[in-house]
Picture 1 (cartoon, helix red, strand yellow):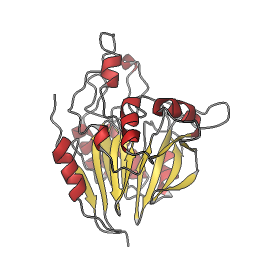
Picture 2 (cartoon, helix red, strand yellow; picture 1 turned 180 degrees about the vertical axis):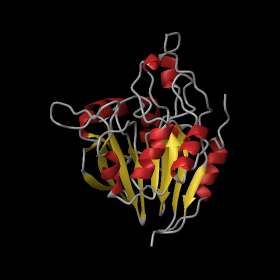
Picture 3 (cartoon, helix red, strand yellow; picture 1 turned 180 degrees about the horizontal axis):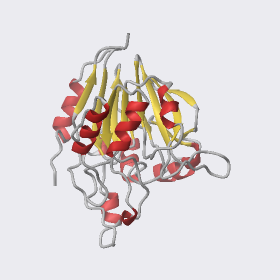
Picture 4 (cartoon, helix red, strand yellow; picture 1 turned 135 degrees about the vertical axis):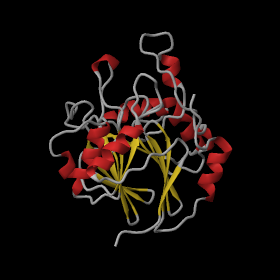
Length: 283
């Protein structure tokens, strides 16, 4: 199993010692599609998967979810988080074994999910249906010092429920002077780069595990597609995710960096528990 860059006490020490200021944004990758953001003392958690629930669920099946990398931290120790987003209802993005201890550690936690999954989210959290905050395409909400805007994702296609609510969302996050995009799970769809370009994004968090029918799971951007999307959307820095968690469904970040170099994109590969800091506000 691959070691985390930082985990447990060392990870928490790094989080607590990170400088605080209106022009500083900190980002930690937690593995899979999970990220922790800190801006001006406020913490936002996105798509955390900090358990072995899927490994247990599929043990002994013909689709084993064998973990590749150490867990960064027990979610019950994240007792400083103000808000958490989930991009859709798949367990590696909306994990009850992560969300329940997180909520117990943070009783006032604000949980943001696609409107289409509010029922699922409330069941997994063990809370009333009204507790999760619903998002949709184009909906903008101010949450604990962050401004979130919903953007459709395609996993594998752009889908809505009978009420027209999107099943899969990405989120554009405004944090002071910084704008970042967390894709959740997505593949390309027509007009996607143009939709993202209007936000003038500093940072894009994009999956790179790709798609393959033999995996029998929904697919995502591959390395070349992620680099091309970030380039075409004018994203200043791209960070890959959705790799090195499960052996059957991963990607190679070296291929992403090579693809980024081919299109003149700045990329950065993080290791689980590693921090990226942006310190200079846009002009």
